[in-house]
Length: 87
Image 1: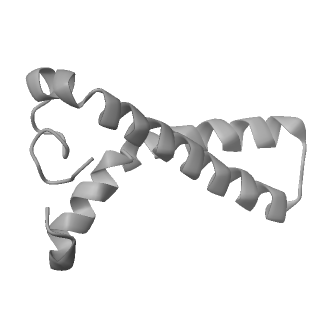
Image 2: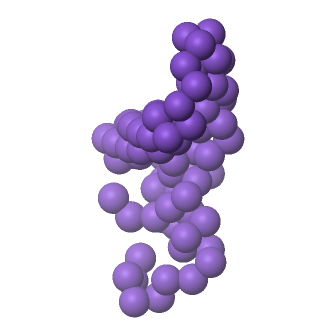
């Protein structure tokens, strides 16, 4: 992929690598745990949600980079095997 030709499809492909629908479930886990702890600091909650987004998103991207050959067979529609995103 030519880096000089970033467009909405390029951004969408890279966003798909982070699996945003799954990040929502990770956020739900944080919210339930935070509520159960009785904590009330919204600043801390914001940092927890931001960290969760980064850690979860980075983890699934890392997995997709190293599993590209397997994904080419089992999940060819994903951004890396379909050549919509580069390693």
